Image 1: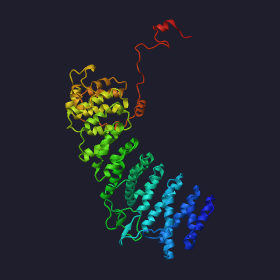
Image 2: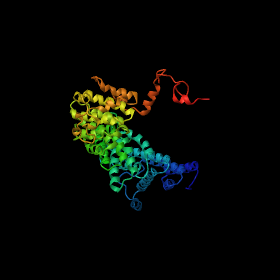
Image 3: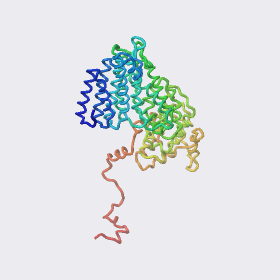
Image 4: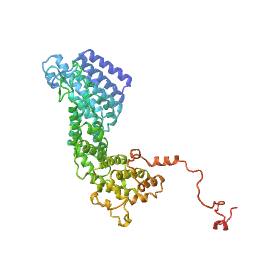
Length: 527
């Protein structure tokens, strides 16, 4: 077949070859011409060839004209004295394998349109192979999922060289099906281990592709009676199971718990390797709502979360969410947890991207009335000291936060009712001490809040003034203040209406040069 044809001419030429192959087995060699166009450098020709292959091998699968069973060597079968029909089916199945291999290569084609078409064709073959298996069932009534073909598809989208975020967004649509989701988890687990162990330094592209795929897998929260399958055996009835391994037993579909085990193995296989810092943050952002609720044993994430919590900075802040779930819902005991939480309080805490999440969790961790007074006093004192240099939008949140701590723990009222507070130079509180028990916060006072009563922003000075009054018993909700930004504070100030006239001086100014008795007015005049 001539190359570099007009797309319309190529479509008609491929159509004639396709019809010839399907109508007459004697024209089978025309398959080589169709497969040759898959190697073209022209995008239009490749797309037409992919469509032709989709129609050709889709029809052959439905008609049962591909060899079923352990595929023998093509050379050995062709040289033997076997029946022509068997030779044809073996030969055509080898061509089918060549087509699938080339389609897998096209998943890395520079054109997204080609990638998308190749993916759709391969998934069509997965569906047809499930309906018309190319392997003989070991006993009647078994359902065979084309694992080998499907694994090659997953391997193609998890490219170590190409960013496949767009292609993965297309593949995500197939994850709505229970069988595809289940086998994706199995295939992804194997591929991650294979690539990570096979490369001395795994490319960042692969980790990003793997995370995009893994984070797209979402399990239902409860067992569903209506199972949604993508691959169905031609003779199967409603309710066929997914099964384990290569052979799937119709009468015993995997439970949600078994899916959770596969989900858990997938994530543990991914997280056991040293991931880039940027990827650790992405994992931690979705850990509490997209990963932990679907694990068979959430406590197995403790190693990853504690390691992240010990890294410090923004990573520690993000790890708090997962640790909170393990501590409160799974009875995890974490030594020195509050000491580490205390250490996260530094000036940058008011400027990080995850400030709202951190203070929401810190509020939960410090909500228990059983916490010792020295610990709560240390947090209140550290936050008060940091508040001296915090921006107004952060102060409007942290000041009610501190007051809430005092409301929950009356033993800490001594911090604001100490008769003679320490002088600035003699404050016993040690801000450099890492252990809150040794910081001597209970011996100090919250003089910083009295200082903030002179703040230039009126709302901040008003919020700090609450400490000079009797604190109410009901707490102030800080939820609306957690995400407050400088822009919102500025916009709010602009909308305020001030008084019509503001007195500036007792004696009103006369003219541009000031009052009548001003020295400037005595020696200069305007002309």
